[in-house]
Image (cartoon, rainbow, N blue to C red; front, top):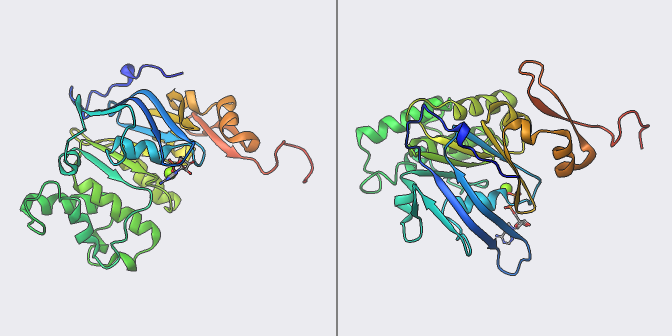
Length: 283
Ligand code: ADP
Ligand code: MG
């Protein structure tokens, strides 16, 4: 099912984008029968790749392995061709930004401080911020429209605002590749679209993005490449049109979704069904 992504290689990111490659990964959690198996997956050559798949299909696990947080089992993860084994977290963090699905609770810290923490891989010591660090923080806050909230503690924000502040902290890191686990969860439609637009359209040497999302429609609208994960395996690796197809969606999500055309782009979108079969009476 996997297909070559070479035709989608970006030009605007220059000839040497930051790439992550997972090979022969076979990962199991302790005492668990479930496994993630990835034979060969390269990430980072497209502006934005979205990973979709049912709950429990292994999306977060895949991202944790790519970020170097979980071991690859028997397999390997390489960053720009070098194995991440033995690389320090700080070395990896200079080029790989990772936003977990559940973020650590920095509740007492102000937004600005949390975004500043994104600079840790670059700063020489805790709390020593150069002009360059300050500029990165300001730029990241502006990108997610959170400048006005900079002085507020995280605990005084809505769920969506907190999410945006945390996205700013990985942007401030200025990585070559961003791995984001459900960045638009808890965001209203306006902010979800704004975040996807931002993530899909970094200029010049901006990072490439790999985002896990349940919002198949946002993924289909914005991504260059989509991966569908089912039960720890990559079921489809292709364009939105390869993934958002009636047969594929039905296989992954059952009878509860239909595929239609986006009224503006003509691209595929999914529509939830109220009843399992259209036209049948209410059960
Ligand atoms: P997704 O992000 O697609 O919802 P996950 O990667 O979180 O899926 O989980 C994949 C599978 O691994 C699920 O069956 C889940 O229950 C299991 N799992 C996730 N985290 C752990 C863990 N820390 N220990 C044991 N099993 C886990
Ligand atoms: Mg998850």
